[in-house]
Image 1 (cartoon, helix red, strand yellow):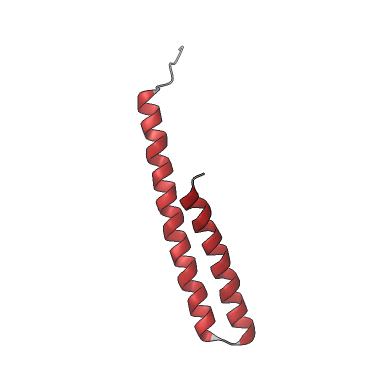
Image 2 (cartoon, helix red, strand yellow; image 1 turned 30 degrees about the horizontal axis):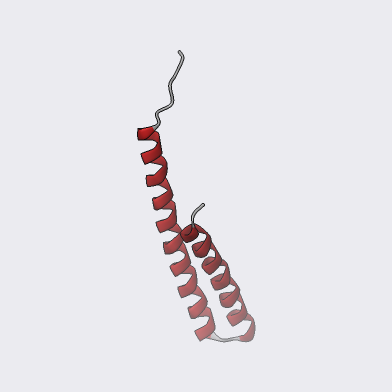
Length: 69
């Protein structure tokens, strides 16, 4: 995992908590802020996932696994 995946997941969780809290206290603005934070978190995590995929693909090209079939 890289830092964008971790930070993105943390934002998503924080956004869910904020959204739920907003629902419990009847604050639409807090719900919306929570949803926005969740979206930001998902985008950041997706960016981190893409970086990780590129890193893995790069490694696979430079260090191909030899098959003994």
